[in-house]
Length: 242
Image (cartoon, rainbow, N blue to C red):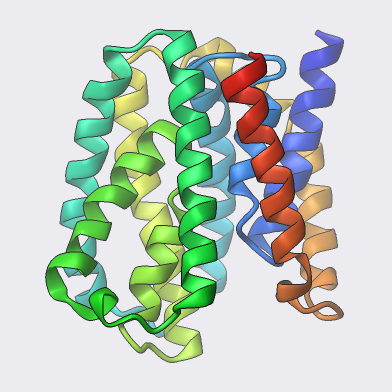
């Protein structure tokens, strides 16, 4: 129980900090939770935290939402959630750990590629952009790590800064709501998992406050490589030493 309390406090701290500051730390949170809950049940433990922070985000960003962009992206994302549900139902805990490690490495590799060729023409093709919707939903369902894909899609839509932030917040919120009944059907979201999720609330609140003030003083780019390094270490640990 002590391990679970400490792990969930740290997970809440990072989740709150990430949501209200630099973002992109979702790749770190799930491997941390898996220290105490080494299997797909870790997804159910985290989902309530994400929905709670999503609610705070959509309340803060209620204007400038590009619903037309979401209308093109979300149907394919929801389809990806459905396929991810089928995938989770057919794998065991060991396979899940390996899959998660592969997904994290894939997201890091995508970020590195875009750093080198951020305006590659293939990203502007409709088929490529829409396929990201499906991939985002799939990755979100099985790893809670769809942030890089969704952000990339939105950047290609040439939205204003306010519209980008608001549309991103609402996209995550709606996707996580769709995941809710899927996790229930898989038995990943239970009364016990909700109790465990509650352990993270103090850390979540503290992290949110720290992140909100931290963002005013530090550029997000300063932490990009640190996040990638920690995520890579977490992925290698999952794949080789679990």
